[in-house]
Image (cartoon, rainbow, N blue to C red):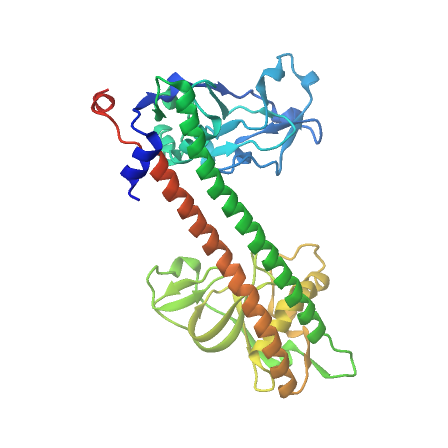
Length: 403
């Protein structure tokens, strides 16, 4: 069914009037809670960092004690179902639906929408605002310092009100649209929860079998150091050398590889960061020609070792090893001697191959779900956005356009 036909059936011939948001919705700014008076417990404060774009997160929430203020803070209370908006900073224009049972309080630079109950369905407004986040950001000035300092800026945003002369029918139509869009939202949340649970289960399985297969007693196999069985070194490039459309992979210190038009190595190697957030973690397994950052390390096993066996073993135990070997409680930088002394078991090559084959199957399962999770979420989000635009993109009358 086409967009026009679907809307005609839904509206059943009634008119749609585009109204300024200020006509159908009031707006309340937050209170200037003082950061110096934030508490570890008490009444929760919702700040711009708690507005995640769809919901209100209570992660890293701050608290206050009403007795610290002369002003009446009760009027800034937030209840379940309230729609909030971040009014400045990096999250400007982001919308959040407060779905928590316990009340919270509205901080400055966060605003609350108050839809007029006999005109505008709360969730209808919520879905509509989600479709206008980019427009609101532009209204706020965009750029490096967007700011919705004036309620009048948002008051001019237009929202379609079906059957405005018959509030009861208008609200019924809005409720039907909400029902459809909420169903897509619930489907996305359910799918995400299922895939996340599956991913966590696979990770536990993989970790269990990895721990079981890579645990060797002292007398069961020969033990050597990483320096005995591998060549270890660094690259020579800096992140600034990266080229967006370069021909070769450039492994730096982060999870995402870069590009260069030159390569330094043509080999199979395990890559780990020498400093930064990736210290002790294995992000990359290089095969073929590649370039390497000056503070990233390449580990190239000799013929006595299956490269993927070394990869799995280092992934499992190297981070714990450097944390224990360091005099610092937090390792921020690695040096070559820390690699050279890392102990590693050397079972027969056939046993290495058997272990690798098992672990590769579990890693493939885990990776496929891990990569599939964001793809599935993105697909569901696009599906939701398609129907949201279909249901909320009402054609404007000539009178609305003229206004």
